[in-house]
Image 1 (tube, rainbow, N blue to C red):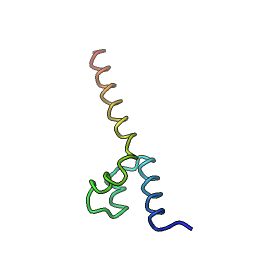
Image 2 (cartoon, helix red, strand yellow):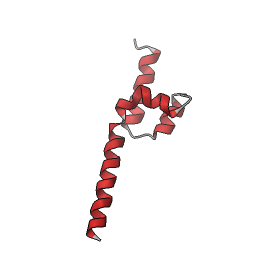
Image 3 (cartoon, rainbow, N blue to C red):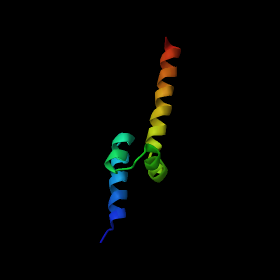
Image 4 (cartoon, helix red, strand yellow):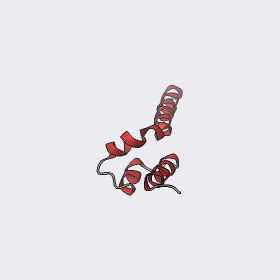
Length: 66
């Protein structure tokens, strides 16, 4: 049987992998700060970094085409 910690980790993993905003995930987990959530589950936020890079790439391509 899973522990309370296992259930919290599952909830955090599910929310962050489903691209639930970090602030909402943090609030749901009842962390006092976003940095707490990031420190514990930051390894799950790779998609956020990739999205940022893709947004910059798109903006540069659009600027070049203009």
